[in-house]
Structures are given as C-alpha cells and as structure tokens.
Image 1 (cartoon, rainbow, N blue to C red):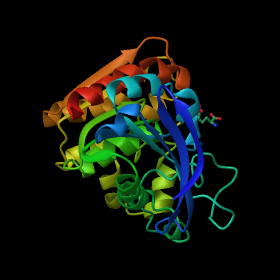
Image 2: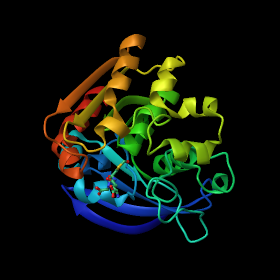
Image 3: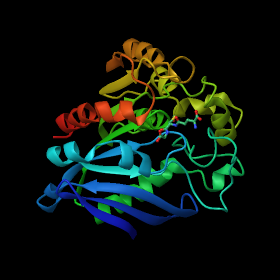
Image 4: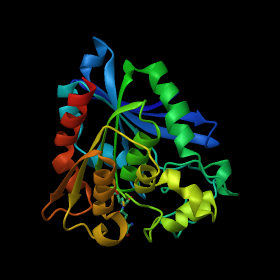
Length: 277
Ligand SMILES: N[C@@H](CCC(=O)N[C@@H](CSC=O)C(=O)NCC(=O)O)C(=O)O
C-alpha cells in the first residue's frame, strides 16, 4: 500500500492511498478517514460508495463527513468508482459507462471483464487491505453511497447481509435494469441476458428473496434525475411487499449534488453509529 497523502483533520487523519489491484489490473486509489479514537481501540467502519464520474475525492472534498465521524468514532473508507489507467478500456465521451462508472459489479463481458471488477476489488482485496492496515473492527461494517454508489450500497447490503450491519443511501439508483442511464452499462458489463442483471439490481434482489434488516434513504425533490433515473418509490414498494423497514425521506427542494449529501451526512453517520455500536 502506498501513502499518497495524509493530513490531520478533526484530531484524526484523512489519508489517500493506493494499492495494486489484481481484480482491476491497475493501481487503485482510495481514501480513509480514521478518528483519533482509532489509536485507543478498534473502530467500526463505514464504506462510502460514490456516484458516476466520481473518484475517491469527491466525497472527501465535499461530503463534510469528518467532524461527525471523528465524534462518533467511525472509520470512513471511500473507494474509487472504476479501474483507471490508459490501458483500461473506456468510452471517454460517455459519463455513464467505463471509467468513473464501474457500477460496483464484476463485468463478465469482453473487453470489460479484464478490469471492471469493482465488487471483488472492494469486498475482497480492498477490504483485506483495510483490515490489515487500519484499526478496524471488520465485524462492524456499514455501507452507504450516492446515486450509482447508492445502488452499490443497497446491492452490496442485500447480497452480503452477513457482512454489513447498516446501510443507507443518498438518491440511489434503485432499479438500474430499467433506468435509461444504467441499462446500457448492465448490458455491456453483464451481457444481453437480463436475468443475469437481477442480482445487481436492488429491487430485483428483494423480489428474488434477498433481505436486509433496514435501510435509510434520503432523496431530494428537486433532483433532476428523480423521475427517470432514481425512482425511490420502486424500492419503497419492494421493501413494503417484503416487510423490510425503510426510512425514505423526501427532502424538499434538494438536488442531486454534494450540497444535498453534505446536508444530511451527519444523520446518515448517526444512523450507522447507532447500529454499529
Ligand atoms: N456529468 C453529468 C453529471 C454527473 C453527476 O451528477 N454525477 C454525480 C453522480 S450521478 C449518479 O451516480 C456526482 O456525484 N458528481 C460528482 C460531483 O462532485 O458532484 C452531467 O453532465 O449531467
């Protein structure tokens, strides 16, 4: 693991690191905030998965999570959203696919399958790196994310309920297999057989029997992607049918940006801290 930068923040340390990723076939960058309390004992960890076009840096720069994470004693890990490097295939003019748009799955289709393996990267090799290098209690993990990263958080929690104890999302893509901005990505990464997309779609996962204790979702009513891309009511219906507790808060007048995310970040961190102990 290489240290790119480390800086003191709220008594703790905001770091940026990189590691060789076998899953993605490139170096991968990630950010970790560790509160000062991490010097005294193992702390719970909350993963933050970012949205389309992001790197690890967007939430680090604009998410305003450090003060509350320091107070609550939460380690925050922010992975990148895709493999990187000139050798990695991409569609440079398409912000909804390729670099910056890994969709938190392992691609099965050429040429994407050689590098676009974000689920394995995050859940296996980055997790091992975090467990090996930081004072983290890996028995107490939460996950949250925004938009494409909200999709990642919901699907990871539903696919790995023994691993995550808490899950929340800001404006998540809840049904990527039917939204215009995500359908093409699922097709290119996973192939034309839509049955194989179901296990990477939060609504379909619930329809197919996946379960998770409870979810918190915040969604801005002035979000330009609300009606076509996000549609939280689909997740609400699925949770209701399955008897899953969902706190869905429609936040009047908020858009899709980090102004919205940072406004409700403290609430989400408290949600996780309450459940991670
Ligand atoms: N370039 C796009 C807008 C892209 C955008 O809004 N990305 C969001 C995530 S969208 C879903 O995953 C984001 O987090 N952007 C980074 C940021 O710092 O705001 C366009 O032109 O519409």
